[in-house]
Image 1: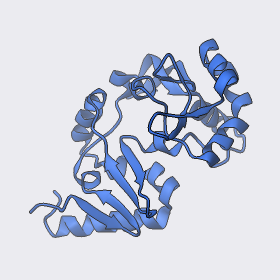
Image 2 (image 1 turned 135 degrees about the vertical axis):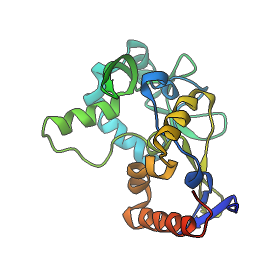
Image 3 (image 1 turned 60 degrees about the vertical axis):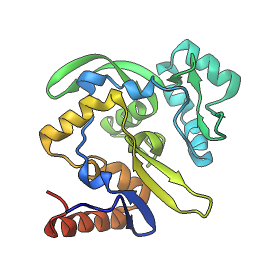
Amino acid sequence: MKLPPILQVGDVLISSDLLTEEFCCDLSICRGACCIEGDAGAPVTLDEVMEIEDRLDDVWSSLSASAQAVIDRQGVAYTDRDGELVTSIVGGKDCVFTCYDTIEADGAPIAHCCLCALEKAYRAKCRGGQAADAFVKPISCALYPVREKTFSDGTVALNYHRWDICQCGREKGRRFHLPLYRFLEGPLVRRFGRAWYDELCTMATELKAQGYLP
């Protein structure tokens, strides 16, 4: 039995790939390449731009001199050639909030891993016992490899974006049998709420019982 390509959860259209594809980021291999590949920054909302500006002091020292210069010149975001508001970039590709550090992944240290300075500052506050608000980083980054699109009538749709640099994430997801919607539980709850996510999980359970999902 085959699922229809588009499903609906609440008032959100979703690609059935969210239920059928398996995924889990593998930083030990990609080292955060999605932050430095591509030709535009990460999509952001005006509210997110204000949130980011409020946190510049927290992340400034983690940014490269080139990134600091770009922010001084044009701010934390710009409008790209498609008319979309995105984070500023360095050298035509690197997000200005890129930073590098050694992290632990699957029990092993991973050197020179590309991280988000905004998320790094958020996690540092949490580890230090400081009060951290709800903003971590742009929701478009947190949801990746799922991309959100809003149509002219206000309808919101979620699609799975396949990128060759994420092949390792697909392979790791298959090893763990981790559906994409489960991997993205945190970001999906942050974006649409717990009740919406629970409805998505209920749909997945029902479809599995009907033989549409393994």
